[in-house]
Each structure stands twice: as structure tokens, then as C-alpha cells.
Amino acid sequence: MQRAPYAADPAASRGREFPENRDGARGPRSEFQRDRDRIVHSIAFRRLRSKTQVFVAPDGDHYRTRMTHSIEVAQIGRVIARELGLDEDLTEALCLAHDIGHPPFGHAGEKALEEAMTHAGGYDHNAHGIRTLARLECNYPDHPGLNLTWETLEGMAKHNGPVGAANWALADIDKAFPLELGQWPSLEAQVAAVADDIAYDNHDIDDGLRAGFLSLDDLMEVDFLADQFRRVERQHPGASREHQLRELVRSQIGLMVNDVLEQTRTAVKGLDSAEQVREAGKQLAGFSPGMANEERALKKFMYQRLYYHPEQIQTAERARDVIARLFVAYQQDPTTMPDDWLDRLPESEPGKSRHIADFIAGMTDRFAIDQCTRIYGRAPQGLSNV
Image (cartoon, rainbow, N blue to C red):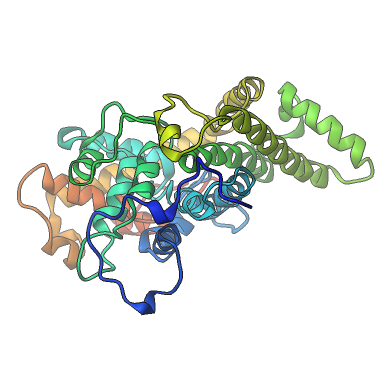
């Protein structure tokens, strides 16, 4: 499809923080393709395969992790970007990178790091994702981080909209490589954000059903879901309940994607540059008002029935305890850290605590449990809730 005039153009990128020497061996990839590939090849991305999405440290392989979720977000994002004439590679890069800053155990782990880091500027998974890719990954001899383009870093920073008050991690990057935090980002970043919503709204239903935390009766309490399921029943009357429920999830994704396309096409009429998108002063890619209301009701249902399920809350508390205990252990006796991390540990605050948080945030669920067991002799029981 032809590139839309309001799409991000890799040939017109604002560049990278650090100059790079180029030679003919780098191949024909665009700047945004390079960004996507750097993200996929990063250690931080590989670790997502063993980090919590909904269920903590799942023993089975049927449940989504942060990596499989990110891949599903990218698939949805690419479809929307292609239909709108946007840059698919930038969209995909942002979708794949959007959860890289999550610590082990998902939001439970993040809450524990927020509390542990109160004296050192706090912790935010979005800012930490940017810090990870711009400073902590060490793939290149001439600069820290992956040296991603301005457009990719901007999209990571602002995919949910302008940032009013950046925490220390994002502020440090913004000071070195200003990202215009007060403006809306590219349409590619906005598409990545709504693709994330579509993916977890629906795929978390799938995982919740598979784990037995949700039932068909539960879903039928939500008008939006009930209407869609009745339609699936009419279209597939002879199918099993399991197949009908899988079809429900698929059909809802399609319904939401089509809504976003229709709404966004209307919103961008008359725009003829990517800069006009940033200067619009509002979100342009997203749901229609009617679908936005349905999506909010669906989220409310999911929080009540799945995310705040009593078993989820109990497991989250045990997971928070693991992260809190690890932070205390490394503060009190840094020699319990691996040598390569110990050698780089700052002597004073807040650098010391931030370094410890960097180490913990990079852990997978299982590695965090193993470290807690190694240091304390045991880890809390019941850390897998499926």
C-alpha cells in the first residue's frame, strides 16, 4: 500500500542519539527496520518469554507471556498500520518494545520496585523500557544501548499520549536526546497503543477461560460480549462451546480493528504530514466513542473477574514479597549479586539503588524465584497460580 502523507518516513528520520559508521555490509534495511531488528535481537526482548503477562510463572506452555503478548500486539499493529498507509516497521518495533521495561511478575513486581525505589526516584516500567534499550543493552562498541531512532524512542515514551512529568529514567534520556514529551506522538505510536488494548482485552479472556478463572456465564454478563457470542452461536451452531469461545475472541479482535480503522480514517482527513499529527493536540488513532465505551466496560469486567480475582491477588502478594526481599538483600549485602553487576555498583545513592533495580527488573519470573531461594533458603510457595 502507498505510504500515507501523515506516516512516519524512515528516510526523513530525525536520526539517532549517537553517530554511527555505516558500510556496505549493512544491507538494504530502512532505519525503522534496523530498530525493529535491534529490539528483536536484544537480551531484554528474549527475557520476555519468561515474564508474567496475566498468570505468574505459569508451569504450562498454553498461557501467554510478555513475549507472546508482544508478538500478538505487533500482528494487530501491523494490520492496522498497513491499512492506514503507515510505516509498518516502526509500528512493529513499538509493539514489540512496549513491555520490555516490565520486571518479573508483571504489575505485582512493578509495585514492589516502586515501593523499594521511593527514596531513589521511583520506578516506572515504561521509562525503564526506554532506559533498558537506550542505556543498559550493550551490543555495540561505540555507544551504550541500541541507539534507536528518535521516532522509536519518542513512540515508546509517548504511545499513551504526552508525558507531563517524566520520572528520572525518562528525564535522563530526554535531556540527552529531547523527545518533545509535551506533544502527541506519531500515528504509528498511537496505533501501537490501541493494538495493545485490543490484544490484551481479548487474549486475556482466552487465557482466563483456559485457566478456569472465567466462564461463559461470566462473559454473558457483559452486553458487548453477550451480543458477539450470540452472533457466533448463530454462525456456528454445530461447533463445540470451546470452539465457539475461541471464535468469540477472534471475532472481537476483528470488530475492534475495523472500528479503529474507520474512526482513524475520519480523524486524519486533511492531514498531509507526520508533524501535523504531532501538532493536532489530541489522539487521532483509536476507538470510536461507542466502541470506547464498550471497551471500558470490558476492562472493568476483566479487573473485577480476572485481574483482581482472589487467587490472583494472593499470588501477586507473594510475588511482591520476592521482589521486596531481593531488593533488601542486594542493598544489605551487594556481594550476593553476580560479579559483573557487583563490579559496576555505584557506591552512593541514588545510583546504588537504581543499579539494583536495573538488575532485578531484568530478571525473569523463574530467575527471581531461584535468586530468592538461593539467598534466603526458600521462596514463598504458590507462586504459580495456574
